[in-house]
Image (cartoon, rainbow, N blue to C red):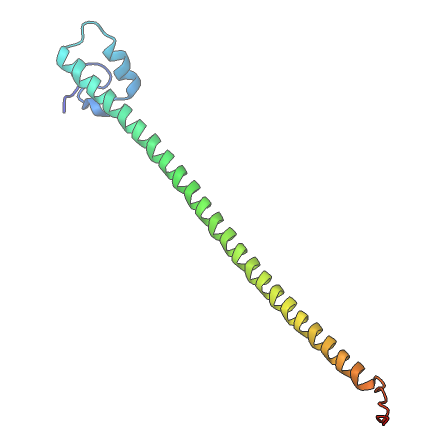
Length: 126
C-alpha cells in the first residue's frame, strides 16, 4: 500500500488516512498521478463499503419485515383453524340438537297417539 510522504499523516498508508484529508488532497492540482489514483481507489473502496453496509442494513430490515409477516400469517392461520374447529363444534352441536328435537317430536307424536281415544268400531250389521 502506498504511504504518504508529506503532511500531517506522513508515513501512514493512505487507507488509514481520514476521508476528509483525502478529499482535500485529491483537489490539489499538483498531486502526483500515482498518488491521485491511489487516493481515488481508497475513496471508491470506502464508498463501496458504505453502500454495502447500507444494503446489508436494508436486507436486515427486509428480513425482519418478512419474519414479522410470516409470524402474522402463522398467527392468523392458527386463529382461522381455531375458529374453524369452533364452527365445526357448533355445527355438531346444532346437528345433535336437531336430532334431539326430532327425537322429542317423534316421542311426542307417539305419546299423543297412545293417549288419543281409539275410535269405536260398531259391529257389522247384517
